[in-house]
Length: 92
Image (cartoon, rainbow, N blue to C red; front, side):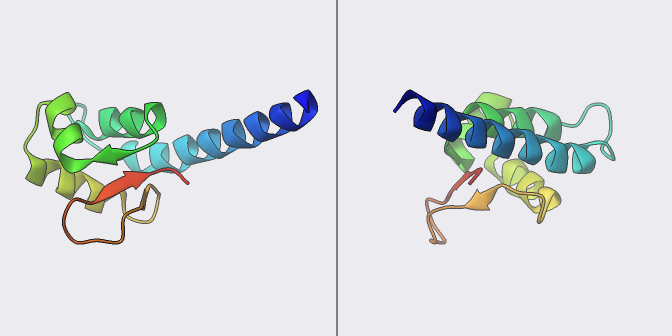
């Protein structure tokens, strides 16, 4: 049972490391004052991120969070809710 838990934790850690590498490729091309790297760290630190939460923690507008998500593009994270309103993203 302990070995199974360790296996699951190891898979989660590998998934988060891969996600960080993919998103860091996108953030490497941003300006030095960009909040995009902070958004990436927010995704890595929380299982679920919404636009209002990102806007509040990063001290930017919700529109800015939407634009940063579009800038990340296919580099993750994934939209989890399948809705047009009250959307949430996470690393799956």
